Image (tube, rainbow, N blue to C red; front, top):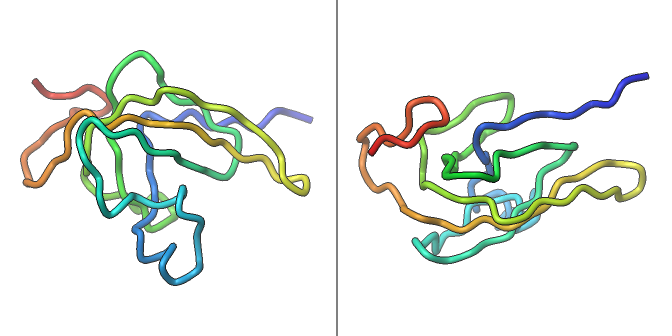
Length: 114
């Protein structure tokens, strides 16, 4: 028996419409009021590891690795793992450093373009 852990070079959350439709928790979605300097909670299923020593992209996911271009640059401040009814989750806090409102390239893989 092994330990299933996923390493993520980004934080991929759902569109807020999934919360509005009652399909997801608010923390699983990108906030509609995303602003630089603000801190937001996140929630992901599974045991996930994130890079905590710099900026990484915030992406929108539709599931099955269907990801958007970066919506923002974030710093993950804290992460913890826990179980509910036998299912593992990862939760934490991230701080937005910059919101992207254009189609320019802002990250090359996990590295932010200066």
